[in-house]
Picture 1 (spheres, rainbow, N blue to C red):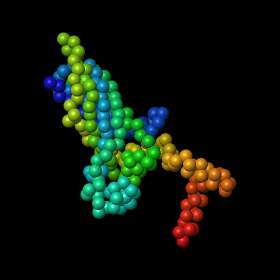
Picture 2: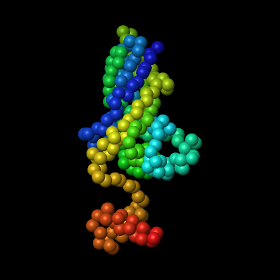
Picture 3: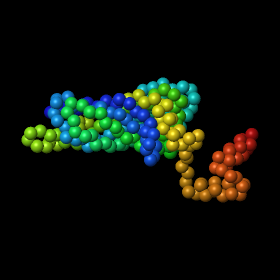
Length: 213
């Protein structure tokens, strides 16, 4: 019976993708020496926030996700970041391949909110694998499934994610709002003769601060 092992060697910001993307460099091993014709690989990537410490400013930024610090023993649990897929070419023994990790800067997505709140350090990731393996021997082809127990851990530097975001959204961010809210913002911008969305938001914030006083 085949025995598969997966290792994440590195995660880096992909510089030439159409949309924001990280790339995980991955080693796949089959330890019994069987010839692998190909693997159709599926992967669930989870963030495990309980595996790291947080600075006070990070704790403030994470309050909206996990509640007050006193509750974190109950709320700081692993959550799914994304699903991704790859086709691994044939090999014997081991091979290395890339796993594309498409990302978004939508702050409504829990993974993005978590990453946006981090100042430094590492992001604790777990890769959970499944998929179909096509083997090849003198008797022809065989098909088997990757065991559900196959997984790999990796500590991705926060700077890698920030580098990716800054390359696609230099000195800016992205916030999704409803169409009604957007229409009201556009009307407010027009009525006040404001040139940019930045100027619009700044005027609204200044008005709110003035009301609070």
